[in-house]
Amino acid sequence: MAPPQGQQMRPSRYLIVLTLIFVALFTGVYFAGDGSLSKRLKPRLGLDLVGGTTVTLTAQIEGGGAPKADQMEEARRIIESRVNGLGVSEAEVVIEGDNHIVISVAGENRDDVKSVGTPAQLRFRKVLNSVADTSASVDATASASATPQASGSASASATPQASATTPAATTPAATPSASASPTAEPVTGTKAERLAAVQKKLGAAFTAAQGVTDPTTAGSDPTLKAALAPFSKLSADEVGALPAEMQFNVPQISCAQLNGRKPGSIDAAKETVVSCDESGAYKYLLDQAKVLGTDVSDASANIEQKTGQWVVDLKFKSSGQDKWTALTKEAYNNADSKCAQGAVDENGRCAVAVVLDNKTVSAPSIQNVITGDATISGGSIDQKGAKQLANQLRYGALPLTFEQSEANTVTATLGAEYLKAGLLAMGIGMALVIVYAFFYYRLLGSVIFLSLVLSGLLTYGALILLGHTMGFTVTLAGIAGFIVSLGVAADSFVIYFERLKDEIREGRSPRSAVGRAWIRARRTIITANVVSILAAATLYIFGVGSVQGFAFALGLATALDLLIVFLFRHPIMTMLASTPAFLSPRVSGLGRVLHHADEAPATPTTRVKEA
Image 1 (cartoon, helix red, strand yellow):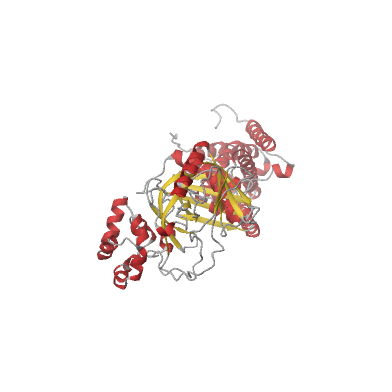
Image 2: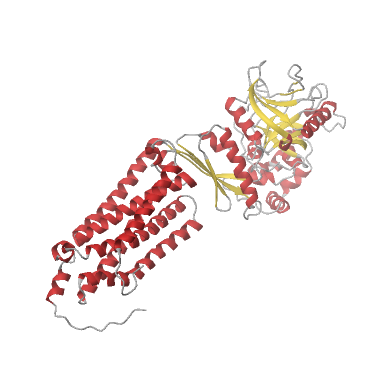
């Protein structure tokens, strides 16, 4: 940007351009924001500075690999709808990388947001058999007051009840003795490969289990119980690889293991599966799913007038209504006699299990053919649980299985302390640079001071505008990036001023040295700043979370500082070069360089023209 030879530089033009940039920037800031002037001039702060909840979900793909982009976007949309359905204001749900979805809720402590990543795969399955979980000491005489019920209604005035006679929610008196091994190696590969690995691990126990057809008999035979003991040591993933009949018939496989399986383990609608109730007291062998969550058009949480309990009312689509009626008819008639004796009531009618992900929410026997909608109820469903379940079902199931890899809650008080600490660190860093500049460069230190102030204002305006238009938030990592950028800015000052001293030492006058020093230092300054910007871009592309925030802040501040170098620092130096103060060794900061330049005889020098 140096003027062509033979033409005198006009600093005022550069300063006018810089002024127009500031005017355009802060005009955009004003009109992009809303509310009062003070609110318009405030940048958006991240959760680590204002407090809030952040949850990071990681997509799990069988066999590894990255999920499809359209599946991630659909999952993001569903999760965003669930979050908004909780009444959360100004929540952000974004995709980071190939397989991460980050949920951010600023200013609020919302632990309920941590549950929105559950798949919410709803299935209605006929109960083929049920048995108490004998791996734990279950009190068989416990009160059945928490027994869940299901009902269906064809109209508001006629509500046929489906009483639950199947034991489905008895609370166990003790914690199950067998649980997922925390040190077990994860089971990977295809379903056949996982089964082969578990079969090899079990050895003779697997062979013994193949002959078990009645869980009650297997639990009462001491010899068989000893042979099946290795099943209690399996992890939840290993249990999930076993055939459904074996999961049900082997009493050593506990509900703790079954409920610990990965989400999505029993989603296959065409397969027979095993599920436990939420209390872990009963195991259910379940038929193929005849009604799915996709058949539900709406779900709402309400209070049942007769019982005063919270329930979830489901409304089916037209095709789903037909499927639901057919399923209740099949369970009511039990024409194929597929339901075992332990899965029917005194009238020989089957139960229908409402399965959400891996657990059975309720499993009532069907007392009549239901032609209306369905209701999910039960003693274990409270207000929070009913609203959460309705919210999940209303917006549909996730197309992918997610694991919660990180969940943090920062209080507003702690966030304010982080903000104060970050601003204090930035202020100290800037003050040290300015003090050193005035001490070493004197008058030239004022150039450094004004450049840093203008660069800070330009960066601040850019942050506000990005916050209003793109939702960009300033985080603690971002503040660290701005602090580092001060060092990058200081480097460009040192390069220019030291190059100026070299020119004066070589015999040039201060005025001519300013222009010559700029030409020779400009390439180095640009190269150094471009290297910093490229490093920041690399961190941003390959990093996630706070690393991206740091990289963006560093790159933005460096790029804007480069703009200040061309439009302010060089023009203002050209203007100062014509002032008497600049020619004074004591005031300018050039000190001994000017003194020795005045004493040194003028000797011709040979210069090599730079490429």
